[in-house]
Length: 599
Image 1 (tube, rainbow, N blue to C red):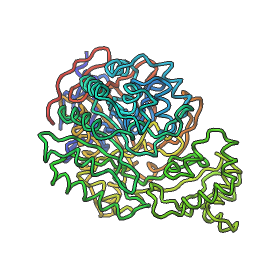
Image 2 (image 1 turned 120 degrees about the horizontal axis):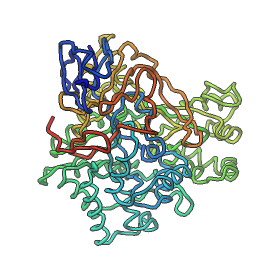
Image 3 (image 1 turned 30 degrees about the vertical axis):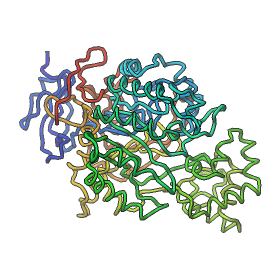
Image 4 (image 1 turned 180 degrees about the vertical axis):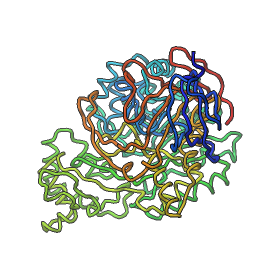
């Protein structure tokens, strides 16, 4: 019998704490790191050896904002994250879970917001769902052949539908009764007992329902008001758990409400609040100063624990025709997306009255916005008419003597979803992108893995940040050290979310990513497309590159040198459900749980 299951030999070891790395051998047995040695360990003591010479050996990355809720049911290996070194992902964000509402209701709240076809969501739930409570959900997810570890929020929209019924949950006039609020707090308490990180919500009214019966109404949590909000936050506050949410896109934003909720100035306990999103917006450039300085100042004044989520790369999105969530933010755009039938939608787009409406929305400088609404900054990347590729809609309009809106709508009418284009919404200025990446009130996250499949791909944002850090150092313009960047992508977020993850020391679960720093180059920023066989061959955007040479989950090598382990996701998987505040060891059929020790 070998002493060790695996030795990672001679790598540049980062423990996740932000401390300086050093060259060491790591020995792994029974899913844990059992020895870290500056002297070479005997290879004959191990069943498997990975040569880490010249490579960064780090805790596996933590992805705090994913929507893998559906994908993990049909393709539990979650290979698009594993190939980029992610070993822990958090689901259930933005009020969206698939736990308590009916399958069709879960699809209605999930599909349009996260741009995953509704029939796929319903089919996955019909085939795989065996649960109706948070506790049953935990057991079911822990029984999947997961390629990586999963932690979860309880979605407030899901819960609200279960308690109030869909009709009342999305009715602005309906106010939950005291009994209904009591039932919600009871469910939330049960979810926290089962290990959920907290509750997720959204107050962003542009997030709309799919389906037929309530199509285009805003999500249930956009209708939550004071008493319900306070009652649920009280449960989270008393249990030391987290509220994750999205603020309103409005001329009267509700961000102050979240700062006050996080405050302990007038309460005994703070509420951890994680809010989308810190970004350098093209629509509102001065907003960057509030993002950078508002949270630190208010946290200090209010004794709060408020954190922004931040995608540490340019926020570039792609669209097929008019199918992009940013059009939900103004009336004419939402009206087009409200129509499912293509012929009926085309009739609307051809209407001169509609075009005048769209132009008014496009030119309105006072309406709140996420998208900058500049069609000169929206470039065609694919089209049956190849002469249009690499041109903006504004330029095409100039060449045709048309308003940019008319040029855009003409091309959507002519080519439908076959005209593909892109635009960068935020994080376009490297100076401020660097400042946000170093800000203590900002968490690295918001990659949205598993959602917006045709619109974007940020599965590897961790590697993209490391590439920028490495490049800045080579240019003698550092904004983070490598060890600090590793800390921000691993232990910092894991500790804040109270997860058994993000560290790589003796006694820690062996969740490891090995990166070849010489391959952290421009290739990590590239995009391509691949089919999802489990989604009927739907093509999604993905990231590629070979910077990660191995990903290890609970001591098992799941990805190495461009290949996934045989049978991963189908026959086996080392990933576990990670409950808040508890250690998780072993495989999902032989686990020993114990309280997490402080880092």
